[in-house]
Amino acid sequence: MSNYSLETIDKELEEIESALEEYRALIQRRATLQQLRAIIAKLENKEPTIAALPLPVVPVNGNSKQALDSHADYVREALRKSGPLTMSELLEAVRELGWKGSGDDAKDKARLNNPLYRGKGTHFQLRHGKWSLI
Figure 1: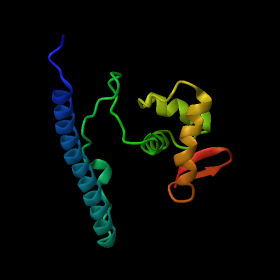
Figure 2 (figure 1 turned 180 degrees about the vertical axis):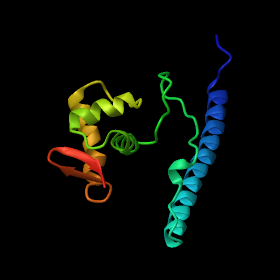
Figure 3 (figure 1 turned 120 degrees about the vertical axis):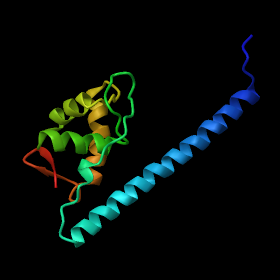
Figure 4 (figure 1 turned 90 degrees about the vertical axis):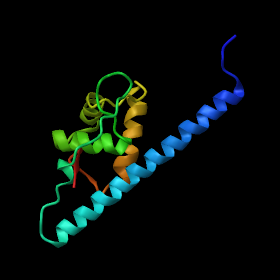
């Protein structure tokens, strides 16, 4: 029999959830400060240097690539690195960045379509069958 009981597992899960909440709050604060910095830099006619800020190293499923926060982050990074891409090229590019997906191309393309169309006109644009950043 193991040394685990429902009570010890629940207690450890609560501790982990508490630590994750603190981590999420730090991520949100960092994002807020980055946005504020970009606004102030724009008002002062200086180039924002958000891209130059160091990113924390976050592992992803053992493939030694840094994890990103969302599908949109993977899409944005792939388009930033590669320029305009068709949906098939975009799928390959996000997989090279470490995005796991389901392995089913049709399902994965549908998952990538969601942030693309939600951000269409504000973050992403579709021209001549290729997606790009605005």
